[in-house]
Length: 81
Image (cartoon, rainbow, N blue to C red; front, top):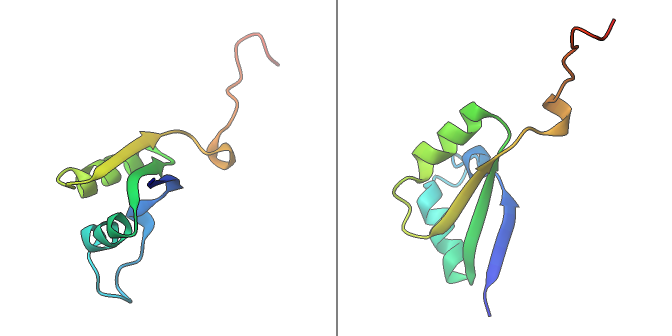
């Protein structure tokens, strides 16, 4: 049996305090049986950052892009007043 991290934000991890690279953190998770990771983006820029950060990651890392409800808005149509 292995684990799946179904929601994280790998590009938001502050690596400065530990001085670890993001790939080292992912490798540690992999060794602890987290075999699949889904990193979630909340904007297009976030998605591009994740894509760039993880393009050479040798693990099963997937990323998705969506709009967080806090950042969504409704457009008015011509029929609305």
